[in-house]
Length: 171
Image 1 (cartoon, helix red, strand yellow):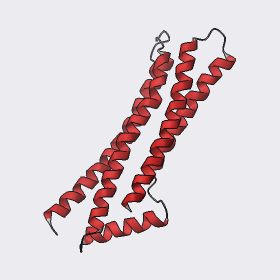
Image 2: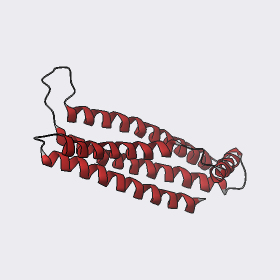
Image 3: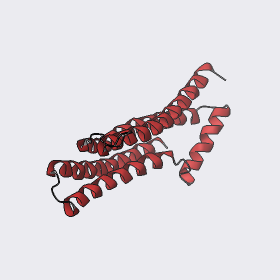
Image 4: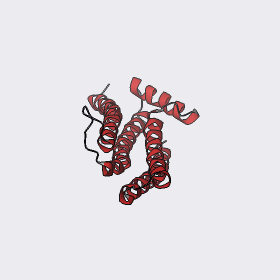
């Protein structure tokens, strides 16, 4: 087996590891931003920064874009390896390609996508709830929550569609 093929396979594995690291980073960063926004802390007098909640959808979209580019990198390497003449990695990539064409068994992309959708909808509804049910609310905070949730939702759908198109081009 050639060193170049092994090198490509190693690059693919490293890209997958980075995707998992990005998933962990997404979870941690959204939790930190959310806790800063609501003022969660060790003392009762912790200051709140409600504008920070509007950053959550943007951070999610940014991380999703990086993860999507890593997914495309993995698929490009897999597509290249699949088209080689022989070898265990070639057989493995053909097997994975057959699985992807029959049924989407690789669900990590869905985890990125649906977690962003969930957070965006939650922030949007939270903003609407503040607007409808709370008195003496800072309208700029409410608008930031509503707009960031809505924009994040729309961008997430657009990213998913473009990702699907790019993925189909590789198979």
